Length: 486
Image (cartoon, rainbow, N blue to C red):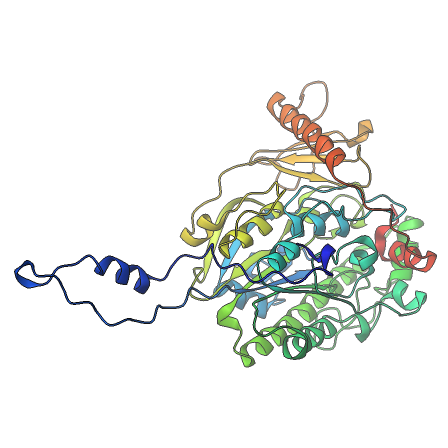
Protein backbone atom coordinates (compact mmCIF):
# COMPACT_ATOMS: atom_id res chain seq x y z
CA UNK A 1 0.00 0.00 0.00
CA UNK A 2 1.19 3.48 -0.72
CA UNK A 3 -0.28 6.89 -0.14
CA UNK A 4 -1.79 6.54 -3.58
CA UNK A 5 -4.12 4.12 -1.76
CA UNK A 6 -4.80 6.22 1.31
CA UNK A 7 -8.43 5.13 1.35
CA UNK A 8 -7.24 1.66 2.25
CA UNK A 9 -6.64 0.90 5.94
CA UNK A 10 -3.16 1.67 7.23
CA UNK A 11 -0.56 -1.04 7.15
CA UNK A 12 1.00 -1.65 10.58
CA UNK A 13 4.65 -0.92 11.13
CA UNK A 14 6.85 -3.74 9.87
CA UNK A 15 9.77 -4.35 12.21
CA UNK A 16 10.48 -7.89 10.99
CA UNK A 17 13.64 -6.72 9.24
CA UNK A 18 15.23 -5.51 12.47
CA UNK A 19 17.73 -7.80 14.22
CA UNK A 20 16.67 -9.55 17.46
CA UNK A 21 18.22 -8.15 20.60
CA UNK A 22 21.38 -9.66 22.02
CA UNK A 23 19.64 -10.47 25.31
CA UNK A 24 16.98 -12.52 23.57
CA UNK A 25 19.62 -14.34 21.55
CA UNK A 26 21.59 -15.25 24.69
CA UNK A 27 18.40 -16.44 26.36
CA UNK A 28 17.67 -18.77 23.48
CA UNK A 29 21.22 -20.14 23.44
CA UNK A 30 21.20 -20.64 27.21
CA UNK A 31 18.18 -22.93 27.01
CA UNK A 32 20.44 -25.80 25.89
CA UNK A 33 23.05 -25.41 28.69
CA UNK A 34 23.90 -27.94 31.47
CA UNK A 35 24.52 -27.58 35.24
CA UNK A 36 27.30 -29.11 37.34
CA UNK A 37 27.90 -32.89 37.22
CA UNK A 38 26.10 -33.01 33.90
CA UNK A 39 22.73 -32.48 35.53
CA UNK A 40 20.16 -30.58 33.59
CA UNK A 41 19.91 -26.94 34.56
CA UNK A 42 16.58 -26.19 36.21
CA UNK A 43 14.33 -24.13 34.00
CA UNK A 44 14.94 -20.43 34.49
CA UNK A 45 11.98 -18.24 35.26
CA UNK A 46 10.58 -16.49 32.22
CA UNK A 47 12.47 -13.33 31.36
CA UNK A 48 11.11 -10.36 29.54
CA UNK A 49 12.62 -10.07 26.06
CA UNK A 50 14.44 -6.88 25.26
CA UNK A 51 12.56 -4.78 22.74
CA UNK A 52 13.75 -4.70 19.15
CA UNK A 53 15.86 -1.66 18.25
CA UNK A 54 13.63 1.34 17.74
CA UNK A 55 13.53 2.49 14.12
CA UNK A 56 15.02 5.97 13.78
CA UNK A 57 13.26 9.09 12.67
CA UNK A 58 14.52 10.32 9.31
CA UNK A 59 14.87 14.03 8.61
CA UNK A 60 16.05 15.41 5.25
CA UNK A 61 17.12 19.08 5.36
CA UNK A 62 17.44 20.07 1.70
CA UNK A 63 18.85 23.50 0.93
CA UNK A 64 18.07 24.76 -2.56
CA UNK A 65 21.01 26.12 -4.60
CA UNK A 66 23.75 25.63 -2.00
CA UNK A 67 27.29 25.13 -3.30
CA UNK A 68 29.48 22.89 -1.16
CA UNK A 69 32.47 25.22 -1.44
CA UNK A 70 30.68 28.02 0.46
CA UNK A 71 30.63 26.06 3.74
CA UNK A 72 33.41 26.05 6.30
CA UNK A 73 33.33 22.26 6.57
CA UNK A 74 34.04 22.13 2.82
CA UNK A 75 36.92 24.61 2.95
CA UNK A 76 35.29 28.04 2.68
CA UNK A 77 37.51 30.81 4.02
CA UNK A 78 34.55 32.72 5.48
CA UNK A 79 32.58 31.93 8.63
CA UNK A 80 29.34 31.22 6.79
CA UNK A 81 28.23 27.98 8.43
CA UNK A 82 28.90 27.35 12.14
CA UNK A 83 25.83 25.14 12.61
CA UNK A 84 26.42 23.12 9.45
CA UNK A 85 30.05 22.76 10.50
CA UNK A 86 28.93 21.54 13.93
CA UNK A 87 26.70 18.95 12.29
CA UNK A 88 29.68 17.73 10.27
CA UNK A 89 31.79 17.60 13.44
CA UNK A 90 29.21 15.29 15.00
CA UNK A 91 28.48 13.20 11.93
CA UNK A 92 29.84 11.93 8.63
CA UNK A 93 30.73 14.41 5.88
CA UNK A 94 30.89 13.08 2.33
CA UNK A 95 33.53 15.11 0.55
CA UNK A 96 32.67 14.67 -3.11
CA UNK A 97 28.92 14.26 -3.57
CA UNK A 98 27.58 15.28 -6.97
CA UNK A 99 23.97 16.06 -7.86
CA UNK A 100 22.36 14.39 -10.83
CA UNK A 101 21.04 17.61 -12.41
CA UNK A 102 21.66 21.35 -12.28
CA UNK A 103 18.14 22.45 -11.37
CA UNK A 104 15.56 21.58 -8.79
CA UNK A 105 12.89 19.30 -10.20
CA UNK A 106 15.00 16.51 -11.73
CA UNK A 107 17.64 16.75 -9.01
CA UNK A 108 15.19 16.52 -6.11
CA UNK A 109 13.46 13.60 -7.77
CA UNK A 110 16.80 11.79 -7.96
CA UNK A 111 17.47 12.42 -4.27
CA UNK A 112 14.02 11.31 -3.14
CA UNK A 113 13.79 8.24 -5.39
CA UNK A 114 17.37 7.03 -5.80
CA UNK A 115 16.98 7.15 -9.58
CA UNK A 116 18.67 9.14 -12.32
CA UNK A 117 16.85 12.26 -13.54
CA UNK A 118 13.67 12.13 -15.54
CA UNK A 119 12.83 14.96 -17.95
CA UNK A 120 10.85 17.94 -16.69
CA UNK A 121 10.02 19.99 -19.80
CA UNK A 122 10.34 23.76 -20.13
CA UNK A 123 6.56 24.16 -20.11
CA UNK A 124 6.34 22.77 -16.56
CA UNK A 125 4.14 19.86 -17.60
CA UNK A 126 6.48 17.23 -16.13
CA UNK A 127 5.45 15.21 -13.09
CA UNK A 128 6.70 12.43 -10.85
CA UNK A 129 5.56 9.14 -12.42
CA UNK A 130 3.18 7.35 -10.04
CA UNK A 131 4.92 4.04 -10.73
CA UNK A 132 8.17 5.45 -9.32
CA UNK A 133 8.51 4.74 -5.59
CA UNK A 134 9.71 7.71 -3.58
CA UNK A 135 11.41 7.23 -0.24
CA UNK A 136 8.41 8.69 1.59
CA UNK A 137 6.20 5.92 0.20
CA UNK A 138 8.61 3.20 1.31
CA UNK A 139 8.85 4.62 4.80
CA UNK A 140 5.07 4.96 5.00
CA UNK A 141 4.62 1.34 3.99
CA UNK A 142 7.01 0.28 6.75
CA UNK A 143 5.30 2.16 9.54
CA UNK A 144 6.73 5.70 9.50
CA UNK A 145 4.57 8.80 9.59
CA UNK A 146 5.59 10.92 6.60
CA UNK A 147 5.55 14.64 5.86
CA UNK A 148 7.06 17.22 3.53
CA UNK A 149 7.26 20.97 4.09
CA UNK A 150 8.49 23.26 1.30
CA UNK A 151 8.63 26.92 0.38
CA UNK A 152 9.17 26.67 -3.38
CA UNK A 153 6.72 26.13 -6.21
CA UNK A 154 9.27 23.92 -7.98
CA UNK A 155 8.34 20.91 -5.81
CA UNK A 156 4.65 21.67 -5.52
CA UNK A 157 1.94 19.09 -5.15
CA UNK A 158 0.87 19.65 -8.75
CA UNK A 159 4.15 18.10 -9.92
CA UNK A 160 3.75 15.00 -7.72
CA UNK A 161 6.47 15.68 -5.17
CA UNK A 162 4.00 15.03 -2.34
CA UNK A 163 3.86 11.37 -3.36
CA UNK A 164 4.16 9.27 -0.22
CA UNK A 165 3.64 12.10 2.27
CA UNK A 166 0.64 11.89 4.61
CA UNK A 167 1.15 15.63 5.24
CA UNK A 168 2.49 18.02 2.61
CA UNK A 169 2.68 21.75 3.30
CA UNK A 170 3.54 24.32 0.62
CA UNK A 171 4.23 27.46 2.60
CA UNK A 172 4.13 29.66 -0.49
CA UNK A 173 0.78 28.28 -1.59
CA UNK A 174 -1.96 30.88 -1.88
CA UNK A 175 0.34 33.88 -2.22
CA UNK A 176 -0.31 36.19 -5.14
CA UNK A 177 1.69 35.79 -8.33
CA UNK A 178 3.93 38.79 -7.73
CA UNK A 179 4.88 37.51 -4.28
CA UNK A 180 5.67 34.06 -5.64
CA UNK A 181 7.58 35.65 -8.50
CA UNK A 182 9.80 37.83 -6.34
CA UNK A 183 9.96 35.45 -3.38
CA UNK A 184 11.18 38.17 -1.06
CA UNK A 185 10.92 38.60 2.68
CA UNK A 186 10.18 36.47 5.70
CA UNK A 187 7.36 34.58 3.99
CA UNK A 188 10.01 32.57 2.12
CA UNK A 189 12.43 32.23 5.01
CA UNK A 190 13.81 28.91 6.16
CA UNK A 191 12.60 30.05 9.56
CA UNK A 192 9.02 29.45 8.41
CA UNK A 193 9.97 25.92 7.36
CA UNK A 194 11.53 25.33 10.78
CA UNK A 195 8.47 26.70 12.59
CA UNK A 196 6.12 24.54 10.51
CA UNK A 197 8.31 21.48 11.07
CA UNK A 198 8.38 21.93 14.84
CA UNK A 199 4.64 22.52 14.87
CA UNK A 200 4.11 19.27 12.95
CA UNK A 201 6.38 17.42 15.37
CA UNK A 202 4.38 18.80 18.29
CA UNK A 203 0.85 18.53 16.94
CA UNK A 204 0.68 16.90 13.51
CA UNK A 205 2.50 13.59 13.62
CA UNK A 206 1.54 10.27 15.09
CA UNK A 207 3.81 10.02 18.17
CA UNK A 208 3.46 6.23 18.19
CA UNK A 209 5.39 6.03 14.92
CA UNK A 210 8.84 7.10 13.82
CA UNK A 211 8.70 9.98 11.37
CA UNK A 212 10.10 10.73 7.92
CA UNK A 213 10.28 14.49 7.35
CA UNK A 214 11.48 16.22 4.16
CA UNK A 215 12.18 19.94 4.61
CA UNK A 216 12.97 22.03 1.52
CA UNK A 217 14.36 25.53 2.13
CA UNK A 218 15.39 28.17 -0.39
CA UNK A 219 18.17 30.39 0.98
CA UNK A 220 20.50 30.93 -0.90
CA UNK A 221 18.37 30.68 -4.05
CA UNK A 222 17.67 34.00 -5.76
CA UNK A 223 16.73 36.62 -4.69
CA UNK A 224 19.88 37.36 -2.71
CA UNK A 225 18.56 39.44 0.17
CA UNK A 226 20.45 41.39 2.80
CA UNK A 227 20.39 39.98 6.33
CA UNK A 228 21.59 42.17 9.21
CA UNK A 229 25.00 41.15 10.46
CA UNK A 230 25.63 38.83 7.51
CA UNK A 231 27.93 39.19 4.54
CA UNK A 232 26.55 41.50 1.86
CA UNK A 233 24.21 43.36 4.20
CA UNK A 234 25.16 46.73 2.66
CA UNK A 235 23.38 48.25 -0.38
CA UNK A 236 24.98 47.81 -3.76
CA UNK A 237 26.92 50.68 -5.30
CA UNK A 238 26.22 49.27 -8.76
CA UNK A 239 23.19 48.25 -10.77
CA UNK A 240 22.55 44.93 -9.06
CA UNK A 241 20.48 44.77 -5.90
CA UNK A 242 20.12 41.00 -5.47
CA UNK A 243 16.50 40.94 -6.63
CA UNK A 244 14.99 38.50 -9.10
CA UNK A 245 13.71 41.28 -11.36
CA UNK A 246 17.07 43.02 -11.80
CA UNK A 247 19.10 39.83 -12.19
CA UNK A 248 16.64 38.44 -14.74
CA UNK A 249 17.00 41.64 -16.73
CA UNK A 250 20.80 41.56 -16.44
CA UNK A 251 20.91 38.02 -17.82
CA UNK A 252 18.40 38.68 -20.60
CA UNK A 253 20.17 41.85 -21.72
CA UNK A 254 23.67 40.39 -21.21
CA UNK A 255 24.92 43.20 -19.05
CA UNK A 256 28.68 43.56 -18.79
CA UNK A 257 29.18 43.42 -15.05
CA UNK A 258 32.17 44.87 -13.27
CA UNK A 259 34.16 43.02 -10.66
CA UNK A 260 32.55 45.08 -7.90
CA UNK A 261 29.05 44.06 -9.02
CA UNK A 262 30.04 40.41 -9.14
CA UNK A 263 31.65 40.64 -5.72
CA UNK A 264 28.48 42.20 -4.34
CA UNK A 265 26.41 39.24 -5.58
CA UNK A 266 28.86 36.71 -4.16
CA UNK A 267 28.79 38.52 -0.81
CA UNK A 268 24.99 38.47 -0.83
CA UNK A 269 25.05 34.75 -1.61
CA UNK A 270 27.35 34.11 1.35
CA UNK A 271 25.01 36.14 3.54
CA UNK A 272 22.13 33.95 2.43
CA UNK A 273 24.20 30.89 3.37
CA UNK A 274 24.68 32.41 6.83
CA UNK A 275 20.94 32.96 7.14
CA UNK A 276 20.25 29.35 6.12
CA UNK A 277 22.78 28.17 8.68
CA UNK A 278 21.16 30.25 11.43
CA UNK A 279 17.74 28.72 10.83
CA UNK A 280 19.25 25.25 10.71
CA UNK A 281 20.67 25.97 14.15
CA UNK A 282 17.12 26.81 15.29
CA UNK A 283 15.94 23.46 13.96
CA UNK A 284 18.67 21.58 15.80
CA UNK A 285 17.83 23.43 19.02
CA UNK A 286 14.16 22.55 18.55
CA UNK A 287 14.94 18.88 18.03
CA UNK A 288 17.18 18.86 21.09
CA UNK A 289 14.52 20.52 23.24
CA UNK A 290 12.09 17.78 22.23
CA UNK A 291 14.55 14.98 22.94
CA UNK A 292 14.58 13.89 19.30
CA UNK A 293 18.21 14.29 18.25
CA UNK A 294 19.51 10.93 19.47
CA UNK A 295 16.75 9.03 17.68
CA UNK A 296 16.94 10.90 14.38
CA UNK A 297 18.96 10.06 11.29
CA UNK A 298 19.49 13.55 9.89
CA UNK A 299 20.63 14.26 6.34
CA UNK A 300 21.81 17.66 5.12
CA UNK A 301 22.06 17.99 1.34
CA UNK A 302 21.52 20.46 -1.52
CA UNK A 303 19.87 19.86 -4.87
CA UNK A 304 22.47 21.84 -6.89
CA UNK A 305 24.68 24.91 -6.69
CA UNK A 306 24.84 28.26 -8.46
CA UNK A 307 27.28 29.50 -11.07
CA UNK A 308 29.01 32.76 -10.20
CA UNK A 309 30.62 33.48 -13.55
CA UNK A 310 33.09 30.55 -13.40
CA UNK A 311 32.00 29.63 -16.92
CA UNK A 312 30.72 32.93 -18.20
CA UNK A 313 27.32 33.45 -16.63
CA UNK A 314 25.28 33.32 -13.44
CA UNK A 315 22.60 31.10 -11.89
CA UNK A 316 21.63 27.51 -12.64
CA UNK A 317 19.43 25.41 -14.88
CA UNK A 318 21.28 26.50 -18.01
CA UNK A 319 23.71 24.55 -20.19
CA UNK A 320 26.32 23.96 -17.53
CA UNK A 321 27.09 20.66 -15.78
CA UNK A 322 30.30 21.89 -14.16
CA UNK A 323 31.39 21.42 -10.57
CA UNK A 324 30.00 24.71 -9.25
CA UNK A 325 26.49 23.46 -10.09
CA UNK A 326 26.83 19.79 -9.19
CA UNK A 327 29.14 19.52 -6.17
CA UNK A 328 26.76 19.61 -3.21
CA UNK A 329 27.17 19.18 0.54
CA UNK A 330 26.18 15.85 2.07
CA UNK A 331 26.37 15.27 5.82
CA UNK A 332 24.66 12.47 7.76
CA UNK A 333 24.29 12.43 11.53
CA UNK A 334 22.91 9.68 13.77
CA UNK A 335 24.36 9.85 17.28
CA UNK A 336 25.81 6.55 18.42
CA UNK A 337 25.03 4.83 15.14
CA UNK A 338 27.25 6.73 12.69
CA UNK A 339 30.78 7.96 13.47
CA UNK A 340 31.29 11.52 14.65
CA UNK A 341 33.64 13.89 12.89
CA UNK A 342 34.33 11.51 10.01
CA UNK A 343 35.08 12.50 6.42
CA UNK A 344 34.46 10.06 3.60
CA UNK A 345 36.52 10.63 0.45
CA UNK A 346 35.76 9.34 -3.00
CA UNK A 347 33.07 10.02 -5.61
CA UNK A 348 29.57 9.99 -4.12
CA UNK A 349 26.32 10.32 -6.04
CA UNK A 350 23.05 11.90 -4.99
CA UNK A 351 21.17 8.85 -6.32
CA UNK A 352 22.81 6.83 -3.53
CA UNK A 353 21.29 8.93 -0.73
CA UNK A 354 17.84 7.33 -0.44
CA UNK A 355 19.10 3.72 -0.87
CA UNK A 356 21.60 4.46 1.93
CA UNK A 357 18.96 5.87 4.27
CA UNK A 358 16.68 2.91 3.69
CA UNK A 359 19.56 0.52 4.37
CA UNK A 360 20.61 2.34 7.55
CA UNK A 361 17.04 1.98 8.82
CA UNK A 362 17.09 -1.76 8.24
CA UNK A 363 14.52 -1.79 5.44
CA UNK A 364 14.60 -3.84 2.28
CA UNK A 365 15.93 -2.00 -0.79
CA UNK A 366 13.83 0.77 -2.27
CA UNK A 367 12.00 -0.62 -5.33
CA UNK A 368 13.28 0.72 -8.63
CA UNK A 369 16.23 2.60 -7.14
CA UNK A 370 19.27 2.82 -9.40
CA UNK A 371 21.61 4.15 -6.73
CA UNK A 372 23.25 1.83 -4.25
CA UNK A 373 23.62 1.95 -0.51
CA UNK A 374 26.94 3.16 0.88
CA UNK A 375 25.87 2.54 4.49
CA UNK A 376 28.82 0.28 5.27
CA UNK A 377 31.28 2.85 3.94
CA UNK A 378 29.73 5.48 6.21
CA UNK A 379 29.81 3.19 9.24
CA UNK A 380 33.43 2.18 8.70
CA UNK A 381 34.57 5.57 7.33
CA UNK A 382 36.05 3.92 4.28
CA UNK A 383 36.67 5.40 0.86
CA UNK A 384 34.08 5.29 -1.87
CA UNK A 385 35.30 3.50 -4.99
CA UNK A 386 35.75 5.45 -8.19
CA UNK A 387 32.52 5.16 -10.14
CA UNK A 388 30.99 7.17 -12.97
CA UNK A 389 28.82 10.07 -11.86
CA UNK A 390 26.25 10.90 -14.48
CA UNK A 391 24.33 14.15 -14.76
CA UNK A 392 21.48 15.28 -16.98
CA UNK A 393 20.06 18.75 -17.50
CA UNK A 394 16.85 16.81 -18.09
CA UNK A 395 14.44 19.13 -19.82
CA UNK A 396 14.11 16.63 -22.70
CA UNK A 397 15.22 13.13 -23.58
CA UNK A 398 18.15 14.45 -25.63
CA UNK A 399 19.32 17.23 -23.33
CA UNK A 400 22.87 17.98 -22.19
CA UNK A 401 24.41 15.07 -20.27
CA UNK A 402 27.71 14.43 -18.57
CA UNK A 403 29.81 11.68 -17.05
CA UNK A 404 32.47 12.46 -14.46
CA UNK A 405 35.23 10.17 -13.20
CA UNK A 406 38.26 10.80 -11.04
CA UNK A 407 40.18 11.97 -14.11
CA UNK A 408 37.72 13.19 -16.72
CA UNK A 409 34.57 15.22 -17.27
CA UNK A 410 32.80 14.56 -20.56
CA UNK A 411 29.67 16.46 -21.65
CA UNK A 412 27.59 15.53 -24.68
CA UNK A 413 24.48 17.19 -26.05
CA UNK A 414 22.38 17.66 -29.16
CA UNK A 415 24.52 20.63 -30.28
CA UNK A 416 28.17 20.45 -31.26
CA UNK A 417 29.00 23.19 -28.78
CA UNK A 418 27.74 20.95 -25.97
CA UNK A 419 30.48 18.38 -26.52
CA UNK A 420 33.40 18.95 -24.19
CA UNK A 421 36.16 17.05 -22.42
CA UNK A 422 38.12 18.27 -19.39
CA UNK A 423 41.15 16.67 -17.78
CA UNK A 424 40.45 17.17 -14.09
CA UNK A 425 43.99 16.23 -13.10
CA UNK A 426 45.50 19.20 -14.92
CA UNK A 427 42.42 21.46 -15.17
CA UNK A 428 40.45 21.30 -11.89
CA UNK A 429 38.58 24.47 -12.82
CA UNK A 430 37.17 22.72 -15.92
CA UNK A 431 38.14 25.62 -18.18
CA UNK A 432 40.00 24.05 -21.10
CA UNK A 433 37.89 22.01 -23.49
CA UNK A 434 40.00 19.28 -25.07
CA UNK A 435 37.45 18.20 -27.67
CA UNK A 436 39.14 18.88 -30.98
CA UNK A 437 40.79 16.79 -33.64
CA UNK A 438 43.80 16.08 -31.45
CA UNK A 439 41.99 15.04 -28.28
CA UNK A 440 39.08 12.69 -28.94
CA UNK A 441 37.15 11.67 -25.83
CA UNK A 442 38.34 8.42 -24.24
CA UNK A 443 36.47 5.51 -25.79
CA UNK A 444 35.53 4.03 -22.42
CA UNK A 445 33.90 7.31 -21.33
CA UNK A 446 31.90 7.54 -24.54
CA UNK A 447 30.82 3.94 -24.12
CA UNK A 448 29.80 4.43 -20.48
CA UNK A 449 27.79 7.53 -21.26
CA UNK A 450 26.16 5.89 -24.28
CA UNK A 451 25.24 2.75 -22.34
CA UNK A 452 23.79 4.85 -19.54
CA UNK A 453 21.74 6.96 -21.96
CA UNK A 454 20.26 3.87 -23.62
CA UNK A 455 19.44 2.22 -20.31
CA UNK A 456 17.81 5.41 -19.04
CA UNK A 457 15.70 5.75 -22.17
CA UNK A 458 14.40 2.21 -21.72
CA UNK A 459 13.62 2.88 -18.06
CA UNK A 460 11.75 6.07 -18.90
CA UNK A 461 9.62 4.27 -21.46
CA UNK A 462 8.71 1.60 -18.89
CA UNK A 463 7.45 4.05 -16.25
CA UNK A 464 3.75 4.72 -16.00
CA UNK A 465 3.10 8.31 -16.95
CA UNK A 466 1.14 10.61 -14.71
CA UNK A 467 -1.20 13.06 -16.46
CA UNK A 468 0.64 16.21 -17.38
CA UNK A 469 0.78 18.85 -14.71
CA UNK A 470 -1.48 21.82 -15.18
CA UNK A 471 0.15 24.73 -13.34
CA UNK A 472 -1.69 28.00 -13.70
CA UNK A 473 -0.19 30.80 -15.79
CA UNK A 474 0.66 32.49 -12.48
CA UNK A 475 2.53 29.36 -11.33
CA UNK A 476 4.51 29.27 -14.56
CA UNK A 477 5.33 32.98 -14.35
CA UNK A 478 6.58 32.52 -10.80
CA UNK A 479 8.75 29.55 -11.75
CA UNK A 480 10.20 31.35 -14.74
CA UNK A 481 11.02 34.32 -12.57
CA UNK A 482 12.94 32.04 -10.23
CA UNK A 483 15.35 31.11 -12.98
CA UNK A 484 13.59 28.16 -14.58
CA UNK A 485 12.97 29.81 -17.95
CA UNK A 486 15.38 27.88 -20.12
